[in-house]
Image 1 (cartoon, one colour):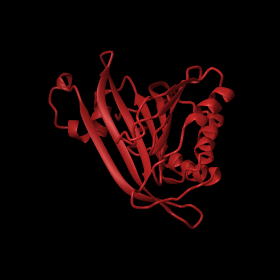
Image 2: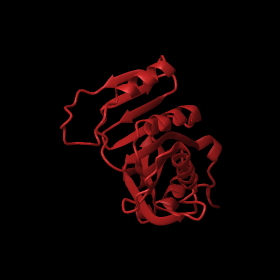
Image 3: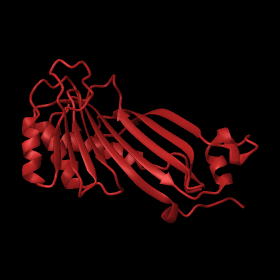
Length: 225
């Protein structure tokens, strides 16, 4: 009889990331972001990372904001901005403020990404082998320490007559947690590097992010079976 997992008991979304990649490098100051976050979220911990303006790595954050009470981290670099929700709850107000901060800096967005990680715990090994085909021929289950399955499929998301072309990435990682078998599913939906979005306002950015988030929630590997 096939093993059906209890998705309500064993499934936990424990990480969500929204990534904004700028069309061109930001050369202005992030000081306004720090003061804005402190004004709006008094408990937020803000950090300005002391890097010289000519530091070559544009993806390294120059500013980080941690919402300790909300379990959220925000970072701004010269070429991108990210917000990380370290729980299953995505606070829409915090996300809106983050997007508006980027727009108010006059930054044009070239690409977008949405990443979500889900952990499936206390699984039956036969179920795991059906999901990770590389394990089907393994003899000794107890000797398996690590396994990975990754698929990237180009897709086109309908957007009111202007389709958004994306990488649709699904990764499934096998591991052990407290001597129990577990799987980590990561879904990463991001727009193509070759297709510049040129987004300048909140509504357009948010609309496409909603499309990416919806796709990221699709059951790519039929985990419920």
